[in-house]
Amino acid sequence: MRTIGRQGCGFARRAISEHLVGARYAASVRKPDPEPWNPWTPPPREKLNERQIREAQEAGAFDDLPFKGERIPLEGDSAAGDWDRAYRMLRNARFAPTWIETDKEACDLLA
Image (tube, rainbow, N blue to C red; front, side):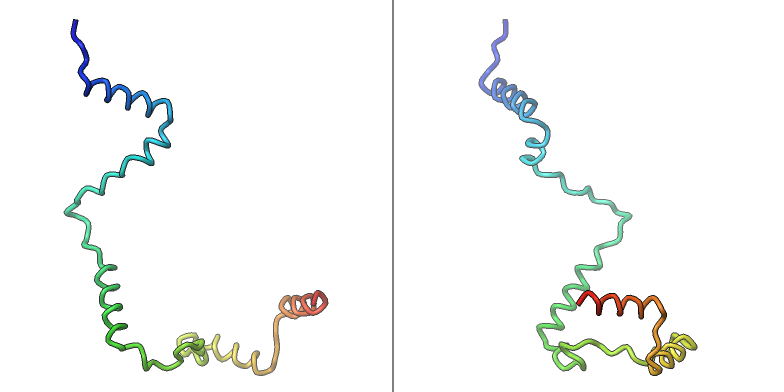
């Protein structure tokens, strides 16, 4: 009859304790395997971009930009074409759709 050495008992004890405690505890103890290397995936570009932005911040490239700490005004969106002109005309006439006016009245009543 073969006797189990000390190493065998430890392995059996660990396997039984993992089974008794549950897979959740065992998963939290084990480290996940890193993703295997895949030659078909492109290199991570975000890290390069983040490094370039950090270096530019450290060099002070963003210190003298206009509207620093303020909201950027979105006036005159020329790419919108006719919609921009229509919006500007309605805004200057202080016109709003009925559902927005109703919402403003309800907010005024609740305040």
